[in-house]
Length: 265
Image (cartoon, rainbow, N blue to C red; front, top):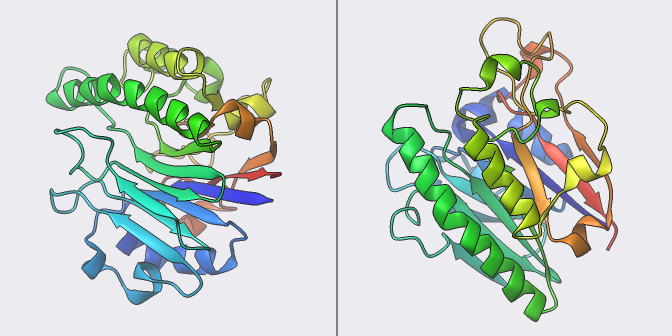
């Protein structure tokens, strides 16, 4: 069994003080993918920089205090790659992947965007470059007899079932028609599978992000924007998936919750 977890930590130093360290010590995951680390490796406390029992890969952003992804594995990866061959984005701390026996696991932090701003243009450029890479990654892995799972904060809710207040967000970044269509292309054109949705096709949510504003968490007015996107062979081996939602608002160590899937290899 391979258990993989993905979570946007919303600042790893802050999360470490709120309960991430304890969560990591208790998790049964074999691989943990982190996004929005927002720290250089040297800035992290020992308990999260190099926790006992884990091999860690950190890919911080060149811009201080922004983005940053990481990957923790129980065994040392055979190969690690940072970025996806983009002159604009490879130094932005948004993608890292590692080869483990039979499977490539990646941590992705897709730009969040904001309608009418350069941030949205950046998101569109990233999407434009990343889709061809996903196709290349799948083809390369297939040639090597490997499967792929790209875990992370994709910052797009694909379907109406993926966010509580979808009607009010139709013109907002994260639920724009062109973003949703792009994610459809990831699934149809690039032949990847949304693991959670494949396992639970008729369910609203399960949401993985809730705004800190108001009572979004208490009312479960969330978004499902954190995905495990896998090649069909691996997705077919997923036996269960779940969102590790905190019991109370006060027990949260991020505005996202870990999304975990178990694959029967």
